[in-house]
Each structure stands twice: as C-alpha cells, then as structure tokens.
Length: 124
Image (cartoon, rainbow, N blue to C red; front, side, top):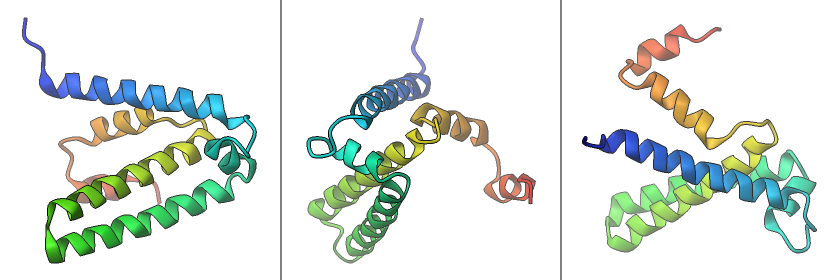
C-alpha cells in the first residue's frame, strides 16, 4: 500500500501545528517576564496582532529584496520571515480558539477552486 505524499505532508503539517498550539497554550498563562508568548498574551489581543502586522511587513520586504538579489541568504530570510508571520498568527489565532489545522482544512476545502469564484461566493 503506497502513501500519498500530499496526504502525508498535510498530516505532518497538522501534527506540527498541533504541537505548536500545545506549546502556545502551555505558555499563555506563564510569567510574561519569562515567556514571549505569555508577554504577547498579557497584552492581548493588540500585542499579537501588532506583531502579525510587523512580521508581515518584514516578510514583504524580504520578498522584495529577494527579487533584487535572489541569493541563498535572501531565500533564507524569506523563509525566516514567513515562519515569524505564521508563528505570530498562531499566537493571535489561539485567542479565538483557531488553530493551524483549521486553516489547513480551509485550504484543503478551497483546493482546486478558482480563487476568483471562491472569493465571489463569500457572504458580503
């Protein structure tokens, strides 16, 4: 029996998101002086949301820089900034009981749909 690499990859991603969610939950109520997540949560929702915006801007700038250079360092910076955006989004989403697996499920639902049609089908 063969393993579907796409299904396997999604399962691995869901596992990673689940572990990150557990870590974020375990640190949410910790001492803000000793935990970055606790520090963000102590100032929720603004601190985490602000960090999502900051990291998204840094991701955009890393992508723009990579357009000019396209070096291995630029690629690593894009990856690092993307990870920062995802992490801060997970922290912010945890406040609303939304996890990475929820987002993966929504992406799976949208897979194969025209982006234009999907957006048009959303409630106004």
